Length: 161
Image (tube, rainbow, N blue to C red; front, side, top):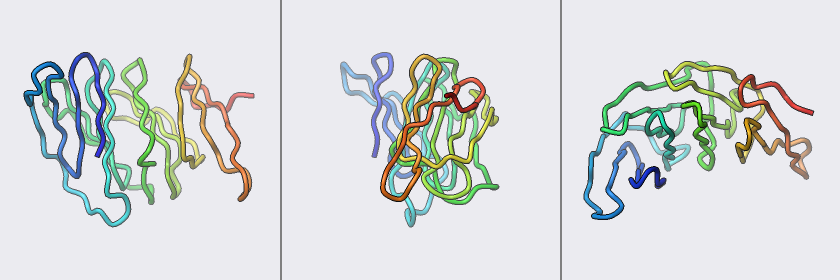
């Protein structure tokens, strides 16, 4: 289960359901049941919102984009990847894009444009992600015993010194 608040509305995601509720009245504004997924790998779904709408994601690199009225705009599913997006981190960028980290498998840090196309993708698997001033901060496992923080340009995906 996940919940995010954006512009006075609460957005909720759980096992194929995305819903919006008014924060003042608690009334459900809309709900949408999107592609059902198995729960064998990652039972939870995550939600993020930015000026372009509401994004939910789950296992098998599936991302769903709704507008603020609850209309399904697109589904993105990357069949070339195995594994899943990290259930802890989905970051909504100010430019309408989203960033997600690969939990395991062959697809790592990914930027998806607001139209559902992949802007760029790295091979870095990560367990956490933060965005500040167009810089992505990613924990990357350098050795079995410790993590390091790696910085990436949010626009290009290039590693920064």
